[in-house]
Image (cartoon, rainbow, N blue to C red; front, side):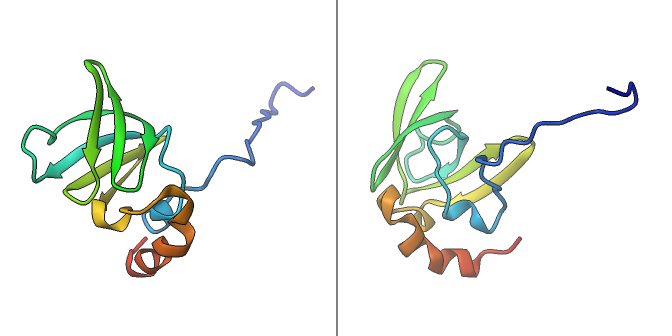
Length: 111
């Protein structure tokens, strides 16, 4: 192997998140912050998403697990060095319905 050559292994199974398609992708495993919420006690919560239901995200924080309602919140998701802000209404459905129902929000979002 040549000393000047660098080989980088790319994981082809990793999703290509961007500001437009974040509403279509899997959220479990992403780092998240509650940027805004109608519940003042939920605002500012940071951690990793460990579970998703139709109406909530379960976030593992340093202090424990917190269930956050989607519809009442705005989230900042972090993937690598990229950050995406998503209104909870854009993801307020079951994870397996994401492609079907999330597509209308996908068309509205900008890159």
